[in-house]
Image (tube, rainbow, N blue to C red):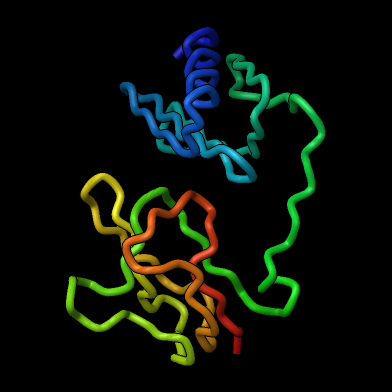
Length: 163
């Protein structure tokens, strides 16, 4: 993938507001996550990562460098983060489901104890059911979205009081 193709790809992703993208072409693998996430480029099985902001991206024979377009805007803390709660956010865009199938009980309810790795919900994206797991152990304090609601990338789903 040459410099021009990479630049056009990044501009397209920014224009279409696509948060995550992955492309494999022969021995080149490009993975882009926008926001405070990482970009990984690998000509071989090894990965090189660096933070990416909506920015001008240039490529060289050695790899990829990101040049910030502007100073990052401070992001306000979520209400749960201020009160010591851990916020579980959606890793993808999709539809939130609180139970494995219609009519079955929810995976978790407020007040339930959760362990790290326990399934909290499902986010359906492109007909794929993605189980969202807790990344901390503690007590589920609040479910922040309702069943069947569309969710965005990074949207808060649950508030958990860590152990």
